[in-house]
Length: 263
Image 1 (cartoon, rainbow, N blue to C red):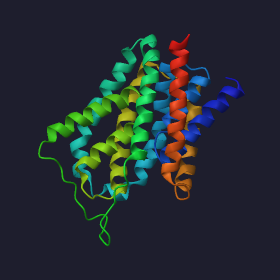
Image 2: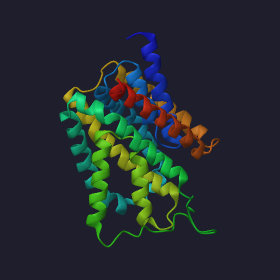
Image 3: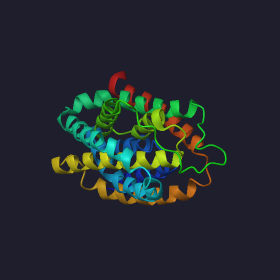
C-alpha cells in the first residue's frame, strides 16, 4: 500500500475516533476515507467496523463508574443487541456488492439525518437542579417486549452499516429514561454499540470480508484519535462538531448518489 492510501486511511480513522469521543458520527468520516483509499464499499464498511471496535471498547471502559448503576437496563438490552448485531452482519455478508453500492447513499443519508435531528431537538436537562445525577432510576417500560424489538431493529442496522447507531440508541433510551443523567445514557449506549460492533467485527473477520492491510492502520489511528478526542471534548461543544459532520454527510450523500446513479 502506498503512503497516500495509508495516510487517507489513518487520517479518516483518527478523525472518526476523535469525533466519536466528542459527538458521535465518526463513521461518516472513516467510511468515505476508506473508499477514497480504494476499498470497495462493502469491504470498506466491514473494515471500518473492525477498526473502530477497540476505540469503542475503550470509551465503554471510561464510563464504568456510570455503568455500575445500570446493570439492570443493560440486562434488558443485551440480548436484542447481540441478536441484532449477528443478523445485521449476516445480512451484509450475503448482500451482493452491487446491491450494497446502491444502498450506500441512502444509508449515509439516514445517518446524517439522525445527526441533524439530534442537533435540532431541544437540549434535555441531565438532572434536576441540586439533585444527585446518579440518583435517578430508569423507568423501564411496562411492555419490555417493545423495547426488545426496537433495540433489535436498531442493532440489525448497526450490524449492517453502523453509522448513526449511537444516536438511535440515545433516542430509544431517552424515551423511557426520565431525568437520568446524560452521561449514564452515553455509558449504556457505548457498551451496547461496542457489543454490536464487536459481534459484527468477529463475523467480518471470520468471513474474510476485511482488508488485512487497511485494518491495522485504521485501528491504531482510531485509538489515537479517540484518546485525543477525550481531551478535545472538554474544549469543543459537541453540537458544533455534529454540525460539521452533518455538512460532511450531506455532501457525501450527494457525491455517492452521483457516482452511483448520475452517470
